[in-house]
Length: 321
Ligand SMILES: Nc1ncnc2c1ncn2[C@@H]1O[C@H](COP(=O)(O)OP(=O)(O)O)[C@@H](O)[C@H]1O
Ligand SMILES: [Mg+2]
Image (tube, rainbow, N blue to C red):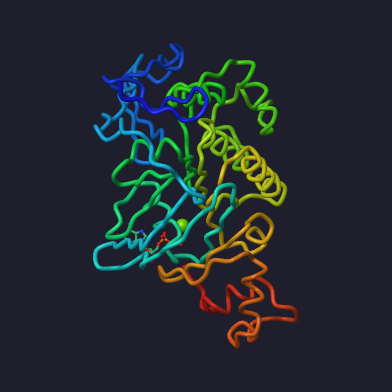
């Protein structure tokens, strides 16, 4: 039987016939048919008591190759929309246990880079290897190891938070009791929301829920696209805390942001991307040290050079939409 196990109790590919059972009450609530995205590029069609998952390619049963220190290796990645090059020959690595930030102004190519890593779009060239699995050639294994929070996430509006968690736990094959759900909702500050429908949550609460679901199967790499955009300062701090916790539990994180404060607060290393090209990947302090005497950076600095001065110096002051 073709089955992928990722750490404890996680089964992403349910069985040869592609069926998983859903808790009965949730299946009833979903009605005759609904479509859900359970992972990047993995859309599931739900029927009242079963979900049909895309078939497993034969390659899925081969043993995993040995992996090195990098959890993610992106090599010479290019993404084109028609003739427009949104990502231009980008290479970088995310190390195990690292929080890596992809920084860039609007339209720089951050989401396109992430989408290619997530297998949501096919790059024109280059390769992405996650924990030893090539995302294009071994998508099932690669996707089983990633947790994804897209720039905008929404769940079934009428389901309660508890039902949404049970639904996704069921789809990922994660065994979780109601008592464990209560404990975990407490931890992420959603205990009082357990019985509320998704549509009643505030932006910060929705964001906490989507992050919780992105890591429900304990992925080796968590990909977050502008996770704190639009959050108030308290929610932002709380999210930074959650990211640190996920790392402490052995996860690695790749996030995009245009907040320099965020990059400095949480990222071990950052890479600046602009016009689809990756400019540099360093620790925030090394990045400042390396570029503080660059005339473009000096020209925009007020006093001591900050990461934001380096960012604006290297990417220019023109406003991007
Ligand atoms: N589906 C698409 N079709 C055409 N152009 C796109 C598409 N998605 C993004 N782009 C363009 O690609 C560039 C990079 O976009 P994106 O990766 O979303 O940047 P970022 O996430 O850094 O803001 C932008 O110029 C954007 O307009
Ligand atoms: Mg984006």
